[in-house]
Image 1 (cartoon, rainbow, N blue to C red):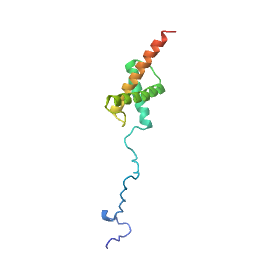
Image 2: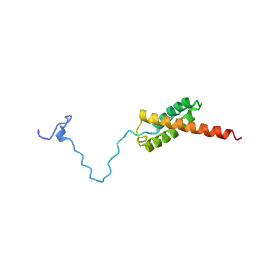
Image 3: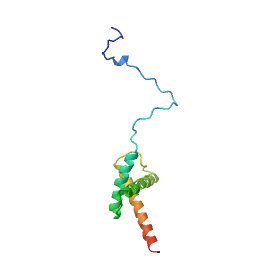
Image 4: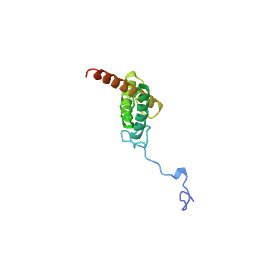
Length: 122
């Protein structure tokens, strides 16, 4: 039968088409998911981090405010971690959630201190 095969038969691995190697310097196709933090993940991390920060600082925030505080806190937490030399936020996981919660708590504490200080001058 050789390399020819009948309709309905499955070709062997040696008969399967091979992909040409990608030359050096050429653009490689992007992976469909590289493990990075996407938009929905940022919203979830932001909400959870904002909720944790609210519990720690005893602040009562609405849903959107929790997300905003959490996302901004994630940026702060990532920057603090990068400055400390332990790397920033890159992948969705417990580490990212903890860094976001630390950043959100820091943000709420600073905003609370500014609010208390500004409230006494009126």
